[in-house]
Every structure is written in C-alpha cells, then in structure tokens.
Length: 357
Ligand SMILES: Cc1ncc(COP(=O)(O)O)c(C=O)c1O
Image (cartoon, rainbow, N blue to C red; front, side):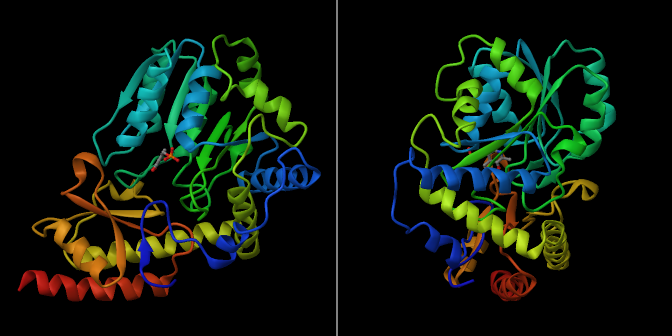
C-alpha cells in the first residue's frame, strides 16, 4: 500500500492492477464484448457467493438494491433486524417505498440473536426479513447462519445486506438459504464505488412477477430479462465491472476461504493491539466484526487522534453517526495485510504518547 495508507471502512484501498482495468477503452454495452464481460463477471460472483441463483448487476450503490427489495419482494410487511445505522436505514428505505415495517431492535453494539428473531417471527405477519450481516456502524457481525436457520421455519423471504462482509467473512448463499444477497463493491471487494450486485432466488423473482408499482430501474423482472442476454436495461458502469472482474480473480487466486481467514487474523490483531493501548472493543466480543474494529476512544479525543494519524499518512475511519466521538473504526477490508496494520498501530502508539503528554 502506498501513502496515504487506507484503513477505512469503504471505499477502501484499490490495488494498481484493479485500478488499471478501469482505464480500458470503452465499447457499447450492446456489443458482444460487453456480453462476454457481463457473463464472466456474473459467473465469478456466483462462485464468490456459492450460489446457483441468478445474479444481477445494479448501476447504483447497495442502497439501490434496498429499494429494489422493497418494491419487488416485500409484499406487505418486512421484519427488519435493526442494531445500527445501516440496518436502521434499510428499514427506513422499505418504509419510504410504501411497505410496512416491524422492527426487531437491539442496542448499538449488540447482535440480533436467533432466539430473539424466533420470538419476533412467531408473533409476526411479516412476509420478509431484512438482515444486515455486518453492521459497519458498530462493528457487529450478526450470527447470520443461525438467523437464517430460524427464517427457514417461517414462510418468510430473506433479504440480506452483506455489503461490508462479502469477500471478508464466511458466506454461503445457497447452503444458508438467502433469497436476496446484496452488496456494493467498495468494501472488502476493494473496487472503486458505483456498482452493486445481488443474487436473487426463484422465489424472489416469483414475488416480483406479482408485485405492482415497482418502477422501472429496479424492477427485478426487467433486470432478469436483460440478464438472460448478458446485458443490463440501462448503461452499466463498464470500468467498475472490469475492475470487479480483476478484483475477483485476485480473490480466487488467494482462495476465498483463505481471504476470509486473513481478514479474521488481521482484525483480531488490530483489536488486541488497540485494547492494549487502552481502547476497549465497542461491540459484544462474541459478535465482533472481522472486517473492521470499532473501538471506544475513552478519554482520548478521537478527532485529534485521527487527524494526527492522517498527518502521518494513515487514514482511519471515524465513528459513525451518534458514535462519532465515542468510537473510531479501523477497517481491514480487502487488501490490508498484517504488516500494514502492524506499521499503522506502531505509529498510533507513538501518537497516543504525544496526546497523553
Ligand atoms: C452495511 C452497509 N449497508 C449498506 C451500506 C450502503 O451502501 P452504499 O453506500 O453502497 O449504498 C453501507 C455503507 O457503508 C453499509 O456499510
């Protein structure tokens, strides 16, 4: 990584090989060149997600796919698991699209447990469940596999936001039973922002077929029609698609499961070093994220700490929303290796000494 070194929580550091892919000459998205690129990226995403479901490319960020979920597959009401800013906004977007929302809400830093979800679903008439796998605002990784096991006992469709987990934490779409698995590319996949994708189950497509007032841009049946021709309804971000294709090749080269365990090792190290410096872990330890570390700042002024780190060339994520001053977030998404975090944390230790003088 060259300076400034990014330990952000998205967008993140993009490797040279990936950035270079974006400078290729353009062609029409109705050409054979595009169809070949589209088909190959869709196939790679299926491999990444361990799914045989259809995969659609969305010319939007992940928020666009939240809208697509709300309009196409939530029939009347969604049960939204809310334990941070992004899961809260997912619920807000569903409501803004005219659907009812019931919230299973937990305090910031806590995870949603299978028992709580079971209890909520047992008395709910929701037809869909919204879950954010990795709550980027608090650094909580919900026990997704166990939550999905609960969903199987109820006739509910599952919409899972894996934005800050995909490519950094275990994820098996078909084995775990995810109807819609949605993400954007600027986090652990380490691609510049502007593209999102989702795998969509047959059951979800059947719901979309019946849905009314879906609009056009995010209509899953229209996306499906074009996808069958290895195409998109409107002009896609071809540079980002080239970049994603390359980024996925690099992940497969390293090995998907190896990439997940690397994220875990690096993030465990960050957490223990930060704790050693007197910054306690913000989320419940059992559910702490492996793609970022959300740490409490205690008596240290976080703005000053992050500014001093930035002056030395190390960019760290600030706390999010109401946790802005109380926490900071060290991202280890994508291509952040052990030697990178060791170097950055050594510098943080020096900065901390200065701040305590
Ligand atoms: C968990 C999660 N979901 C959704 C989003 C929104 O994604 P986008 O900005 O790609 O729309 C973010 C952004 O940080 C996120 O962290």
